[in-house]
Image 1 (cartoon, rainbow over the protein chains, first blue to last red):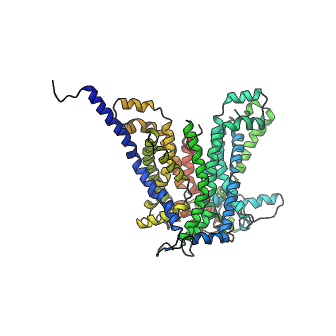
Image 2 (spheres, rainbow over the protein chains, first blue to last red):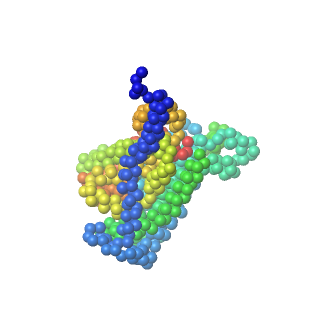
Image 3 (cartoon, chains in turn brown, cyan):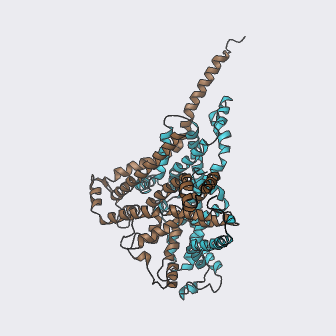
Length: 308
Length: 282
């Protein structure tokens, strides 16, 4: 008999204790690189931006503490006001991508030959970078040779300069943005429609539901997860609009197509001198608007997590 | 199936649908087709103002040839590859680990760390711009591909963690329990059991991140300048400035810049769509 041999129960207990410690420590080891990286590049900068917004700073020299002066200046800044209004237009009109995407998805939800290729080609605009979408659309709108005016000419309407007119420019850019966004919503709904329960549709048909009533009472409730994601990505997309504005009009004419994200960039990094503090203040306002939506998304996700 | 399959409807509607389909597609892609047409038209036709005449001959080779051999476009494309590929690799490494930790283990902070990733993923870029530009400058990485890659990896980790964690949650947990009973170390469970099962999720996520990063413009202009490190999205604006009013070249350039994600999409379509729906719509 070897005196060092442990009784088996003791050994098991020790081993399970080790295992429990291991299970407690492992997630933190796995999380560490990702979390640290994320904190460093994403979470801390948010707070730093709040801090910077209280300073007057050109990005190079000494920053001077000015308290809330940047925010006070925002209140009387006409350009800020225009940007804010344009953001609102983006938010509201961008949501059109959801019904438009649903419409195309319903149109394409068939099984005829070649439909797969049609679906991918309809989805095409989303895969292309917004920069190229912007270029494509600024040529589309071009008053001298753009396809839009060629088509308007067919029905006898005069050339219009969509991007040159402060009244229409924002709508023109939003229309360009709706193109890829509609494609995104379409694909979400197509996947959703695939999962709709055929028995419920049959039952609905037996009860005499057709067309719009069927869509509203039977299909849409089952598409709720798709609608939620479409809503999330569309809101985020609307508030992130920057590329299109930058490439199509650069904020013009006369700053009439700026939104907060673009105006912030312009203030902080423009050739007229860097105003990091003021830019940060604009970014904080944009962040607070977004925060309302983020809170709502997280809350919805939290409800769902608990429901599981 | 909703709407009613056309096979089960009247022949008239079936015919209408079949003819409506290509027409609708043509209208949907019209702006893009116009650019494709421009890119194969000879230069002379733009000078003479015949924008919409059919090309007198196919000038695709000379237009695309000039984009590839006489401009900085190949540089920008290479930069884009050198930015995009390391980002995808980095994101996969970090997020398989974070996704594993948040998907498998139950601990108090779990949901809060998860929400931190999700919320961070949604913030507007502008709130990060000034500090991130500053950090990058301080590390001496301004105007380098590395600087851009590091930030992209960190930011995309938010989305990727969400993605991976949801995928791992859907795996059968009994597998892990069985492995634990066998006394297999936790890191081995990750490496030999969970990771092989995550292959489809990794594929889906990689295509998606590839597209996101390839198409990024904002961070490219904030963190880089000049042909030595700018990706193609930012490069195309200088390309266009160089060839102002040369629509045949600008069109060809745009198509070249747009092509890699499009090719990626067509090759990996199934994965791509699975990724876009975030696994929430099955």
